Image (spheres, rainbow, N blue to C red):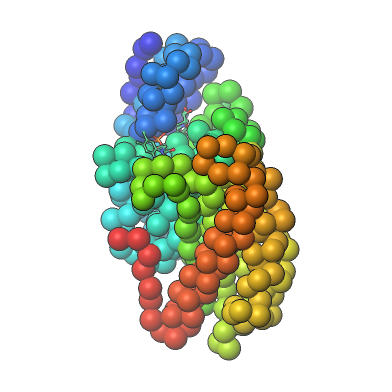
Length: 295
Ligand SMILES: Cc1cc2nc3c(=O)[nH]c(=O)nc-3n(C[C@H](O)[C@H](O)[C@H](O)COP(=O)(O)OP(=O)(O)OC[C@H]3O[C@@H](n4cnc5c(N)ncnc54)[C@H](O)[C@@H]3O)c2cc1C
């Protein structure tokens, strides 16, 4: 297996075009364990971490740009990003251990296309976009459109994600992510739930996006749950509809981590809790306080 370390996007695109059997990697925290457990070795592996554009967190006038190969520790240690998007950063902070975090990336978490990938529901509720390198230039798609099923993406051969775009959140908006795992850490989510809500000055919900991981082949968005919150306070009156919509929308598998019935139940509980936490954070923001998440 040959190893390549390009320093520009163009060089990486060229290396992938030369031989279809080559594969990109960032932290290799999924790739190497998969090869060691018997998956076929690619003909060559293309290291994305030497390309400066792919390893950075940058504030723009309208939001943020996060390089696809940026180690997740650079997100969890980024105070400004964590203050604005505590849910996204807490999701990134749940990936593996400190050692894994020094390697793992959002690009790898997304493109590995595990239904249980922790950062993906949090990226989806924040409407993040993936900028993709292609043989002819770049194209940009919503993160939600990239996973196609377990281990499969909509990327064409030779394409890879350069970076993610994330717009600044409107006033009164906050996000949250949480998951259930059978142990206290270092395990795969039984269910993961991301939520983002916007509240008006009276605390009524003007916008909500809720997404579940690990309960279907790809992330499940919950438009019915969001509709149930529209124009209402987020409280015991409106939250049961969120739980019911979450349990109804998921299509989970039965495995050693949980039965279908258990996963459906947990999906309802976590969706409700994620919305509650996001709403508490949004409320604190409308009251002039900020609340961080993971750090
Ligand atoms: C001990 C341990 C614990 C873990 N715990 C968790 C956890 O709690 N939650 C969780 O979600 N995951 C967990 N993981 C899985 C893994 O760490 C994450 O999925 C991580 O984010 C992968 O990032 P990476 O950069 O290492 O990916 P890599 O292994 O480099 O790549 C993964 C896949 O994505 C492709 N790829 C990588 N970057 C790109 C790109 N920019 N464009 C296109 N394709 C790309 C690669 O070709 C490969 O197929 C764990 C792994 C280990 C080893």
